Image (cartoon, rainbow, N blue to C red; front, top):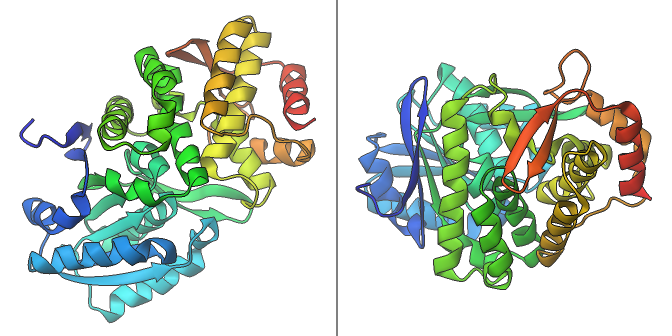
Length: 366
C-alpha cells in the first residue's frame, strides 16, 4: 500500500475507497481531501461534544489546504438522528448554496456518521461523503460499509440507505480523550470482530486489555487497523447484506439493538447493548449445543476486563421482545441469529426455539 496508515480498501459496486487509521490524522485532513479530488468547499457535520477540539481542528486543517469549511453542530446523542434534524441541515446547505461536487464530512461517532451520510445520500440526489470517525465504535464498525440512516420513534435506523463514503479517515489519537465508558463500548465492536472471524485478534485483546484501555498508540492503532480490515473485507464481499456474510457483523445486535430501543436509548450505549447481546447469543449457542461453557466463560471474562455489562437487570422482557420483532434482519417474522460455533467462527441460524430465546432474555434481565 502506498499509504502506511491504510488499513484496507473497500470494494463496492461503484468502485473502491480507502480505510485509513493513523495517529494525528485530523491535522492532515486537508491533504487527504485534496488527494480525493473533492473540490474547494466542504460541509462538516459534527456534534457539540466533538466540535471542540476535533471539528475545529478539522476545519483549520481544511482551510490550510485551501478548502473552505462550514460546520453544522448537532446536539450529541442518538436523538439527533431524526428527520427534524435532517431538515435543519438541508436548509443550512441550501442557504450556503452547496453544490453536488462538494463533500459532506462527518466528524464524530456513529450518530454524526449515520446522519451525515443520510444527508449526503439524499441532498441533491447524492453528494460526496467522507467519514472521519472519532469514537472507537465508529472507527471499527459504523463508518465502514455505507450504512446511513435516521431513526423513527419505534426503532433505530429504520429509514436509510446504502451510500458508500469516498474514504474513511480515522485519527486514533482522538480516542485518548474519550472517557473509560466510551472507550469500553467501542472496544466491544472490535472484540465482536475477533469473536466472529479472527481468533488471533481475541488473543491480542486478552493479552493487551489494559494497554488498549489506556490507548497506548502502537497497540491501539494496530488493533483498530486489524478490526477495520475485518469489517472492510466483509462489506466488500456482501455490500448490501444479501448473502448471510455481512449479517455476521450483527453478532450481539439482535438483543443489543432491542435493549437500546426498549430503554429509549437512555441506559445502554450501543457497544454496551452489543456486549449484553453477545452474552445472550452465547447462551443461545450453548443451549443449542453449538459451544460449551468454556467459550461462553471466555467471552464473559473478556467483556468484563473491558468493563462491559453482561446483563440487563430489570429491563422489561416484553419491551425487548417488541423491539426484536421490528429488527430489520427478520425474515418471515423470524429473527436471524448470529451464533458462535467457536472463537473466531460464527454462523447464522433461523431455527432457535422461542423458549430458548425467552429463557435467555429472563437469564439476562433477572
